[in-house]
Image (cartoon, rainbow, N blue to C red; front, side):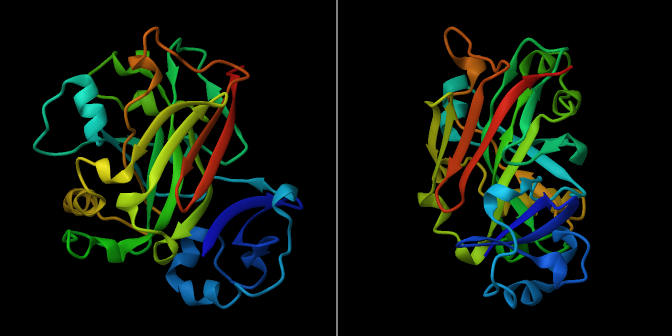
Length: 278
């Protein structure tokens, strides 16, 4: 299934993406959000054959999980990026957090912070947790995944240099894009063969296979769950590959009127414009 959150007819909704649009699950399921509907996947599956209620072009896409409880970002999780930066492999993955209210959806505008001169794109695969767990083993981790979506975990690089701790750099409004939809785990091809591509104004900036991960998704889930319980709708942004703007010569940072697209095999394409913060 492809699942999404969206706004239509003046109301926030969630639904199932089908050939000719979106089936509005809020008309058939009592759960108030897609995150809450994860507790009953069978109810979602039961309405996949219904006629679409809305055309794709008639809705405003919201972040896939607008009410996510926790959003984690992983640093240096591609071997290509680690080698590009000349960094040694770390014993443990390095993680930072993004607040849920920094999210936007597919088609929305990333907001270049007025406090930053170095706003950078970061195309990523995001993993969405489907059921709660703590101390999850790597062998069982896949069973806790609801599905996957595209992410642009955009970052003001200058703010990452303010401190050894990067929380504020991920806290600016409308800097994290997620979408266009979630593809459930059973509908995805083998992740190791999937390719992530980031385009800036039509030019390829990042191009990597997900098999290049330094820390596999199962290890990330297991490691994070040792520290904090994972719940339905929590998100893990699995890291960005080589090719970010700050490593280019000359550097290439986002500016107003740019367009950024993140495509992942088996999911689709997340596209966002860029505007200046008012």
